[in-house]
Image (cartoon, rainbow, N blue to C red; front, side, top):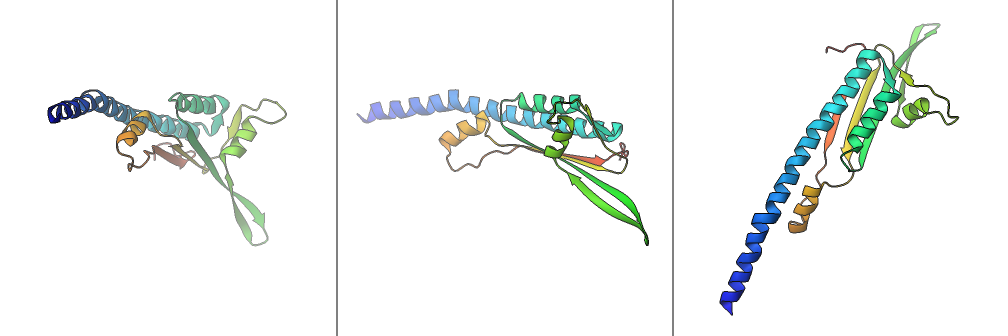
Length: 168
């Protein structure tokens, strides 16, 4: 009886190490590749906005479609910081504005259906993009099946810069 249980245990362990673990390792390697690709997409998006001083509808669609192609739910947070000087009796007053992803999208895609196509930026404005996943990747889900205490793997990508200072 003990010999049968030993063989069964070794059969289960062999299956685990020869089939399941390589799949988990491959999935984790894919997550690293996805992280690199998302970093590149975010960097390209920000650098393009910095050098052209606009965020185009095409740029937004490209960012969302390429990041969404990985089959995971992502949070994409875009912030535009702008400072405007207004004249006053004592010289000039700087007023800072922060525009969020929602406001940028509402500008690019107005509710009335009109076509704008470009969200303008001015020299000296700051553009900031943060991307993180909201759902686990396949490798993390498989690993959690065997090690329930493992934390969720979060991919995080951040890039920002000043408009007009492309080579900083």
